[in-house]
Image (cartoon, rainbow, N blue to C red; front, side, top):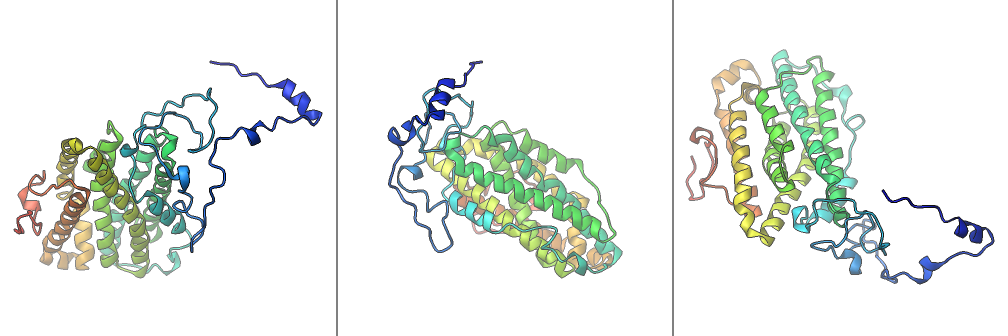
Length: 362
């Protein structure tokens, strides 16, 4: 380890008023570039001007020096392993970051907990079981970026900043669903091994590409569809607000993941089969989720309103929701440039209402 000694000679000169001032004269920075604030203030897009807005595809350094600054030749190497822009970038990053910081909300203050009505015990149990599942799966979307953030080159700082907002969003989602499970006398329900297997698949990913595909495209995409359904099926305005606020956050994460995959494939189409393989593995586990009572039945019960009505409805409502979830997932893949229709790793029995890409609906 290199030892750096304090420059005591400079200290003595400075005490006598003899300053260096080299940082004023010797700068190579783009002096004179002025960022102009827009209608909503000074955004990240507003400051992406001149050379400061140029993000290198392959940075020459691995330091935490701000992109565009003058960097000492002897700065230490931070050892970043993600040094290719396409590994983390998307064209909507700057706008998503601004939206994220402007739409932060509090699970303590912004949910009208005092207005939570007493529910039929069966409905309360259904809501608590759904909240158990959601509080379990949401935290992985904090853990995953935390695993990779310190590996990402600092020249891609906007990507790192957005992932930080995602980690905060998901911590808040875990908080709000845990609070809902405990706020009305029901408590937490059951955790199933199949859910943990999918979460482990994300965290064990050997690359950011693999983990992002599994989490942003598949996992969070399915959760976004569940949030939409949750807002519709919510037994009271309190749950509707919870699902609505979580949905706006989740939509950002899915939008980033979809456009990141598109950006990646546009620059290296040969990676398509790698991404297909990642999603093949994820879909096999997701197929099991669609046949897990602790996931299927709470939603069915909330949709029907009672156990008797749920039994009469059978899986009609669940089939419709599952079909919508899968269809929205396939649309994201299409938009990202990775068509999955015709190669889904899901049993045919689960594809009710899904377009096979040839105009046929199962």
